[in-house]
Length: 205
Picture: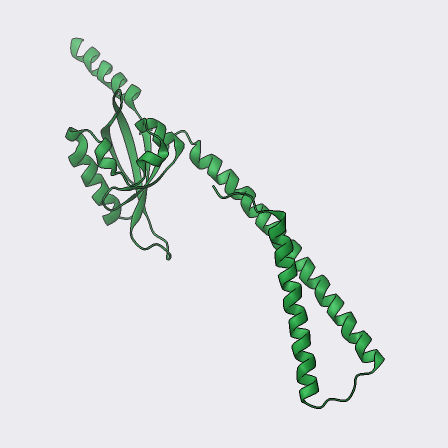
């Protein structure tokens, strides 16, 4: 998550804006001298100083607005990051080969690994062999069709296997170099066990 901007950054921006404004004013004066303009009167000088002061205030106001907008953007980013990382389901960003590009903390916990250890791993590695054909078909559908695609698969993590519901949708923006998708993963082991118990009960009856 990006760190907070230091106040010195904004001070530097304000100083740069003022420097650019003063440079423009000096350039204007040089142009006037090169064109042989008549000497400026005291009134002209005062007017020029006043215009420069007004311009400086405008720049300071603009810088304050930019500062406020950046602070609001950082606040929204912090909120989004919290919602993403601590969502009740795992979120993964995958490329067409199933390689993990991003993962939230819940997703890393589901697979029993640190988030950094998941990046650039293929999600297929965590799919049990019997479920891999279904997962591969799911991944192909996500990139081939519009809208949400779903499948159920057994995922493997250290200490055991759990059943997962996967919901995926293709995602692409103008700045993306390649195709990728978002996949939400939920642990449905308890639901599968309840269904199995229900089937056994019905068979006994």
